[in-house]
Image (cartoon, rainbow, N blue to C red; front, side):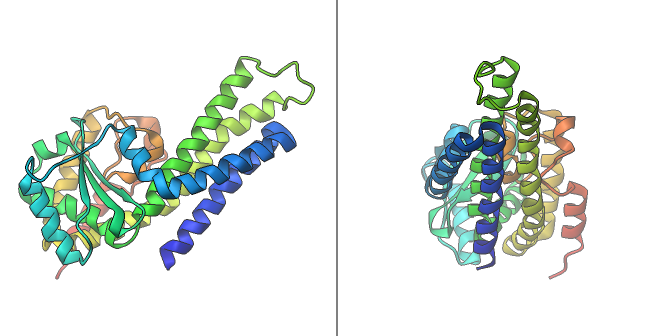
Amino acid sequence: MQNQVKTFLFLTILTGILLFFGSLVGGRVGLIFAFILALVMNLGSYWFSDKIVLAMYRAREIPYEEMPFLHQMVEELSAKANIPKPKIYLLPQDVPNAFATGRDPKHAVVAVTAGILKILSPEELKGVLAHELGHIKNRDILIQTIAATVAGTIMFVADIVKWGVLLGFGSDDEDAPNPIVALVVAIIAPFAAMLVQMAISRSREYLADETGARLCGNPEYLASALEKLDAYSRNMIAEANPATAHMFIVNPLNGQSLANLFSTHPPIEDRVRRLRSMHF
């Protein structure tokens, strides 16, 4: 129930950003356009946001026969978490990372990159999978996936407006928005969406770490994996959309200094310290 309230509040805030954005940029016409866009986006993000995110990364479902060890690991952890076994997808990326998506535990997906399967030990991989199943068990995946879709839409619209103003589109129209106002809003709106993402994502990462540590039975599995993933992410350039960065177990944009100013993840050092202080 708590996450359902958070999802509703999150959608309300981001819808408000879009409506405010539309009214400032296009007046009444802009407000109507933004309202229609928000309506379509909110409905679409609930039903199709997971498919959108998976398609964005060209992910494919992994058959059991291809990686039985991975399926067995997820099946074992899912049983401990008392949730249905999610589908498993592979992202064709060398940068090691993982995320979970879907609208509820019955329609969940765990996605891993090709890189993460190469560098982690079986114990560390188990810790990562347990973390992602923790997100599913705690029902974080819907709000995280909706956040990616909605924030991505805001950033896309902001880019259209920004380039439209810079190239002078509509400048001869009497009803055209003030170009300075439009440009300022186009720059601010994506950052507003990112701040909302940050506020929600950071606390959920700590909780998923704790849940994952209990599921896999040893906090050190996840702590060691986080340290290794963090080191790799700082030295490799990921093919990641900023709108989806909060979904991954470690920030895929770690190697980009500007992105670190608006990181959707708590510091790895804090996460590792909390994990290693756990006793059960």
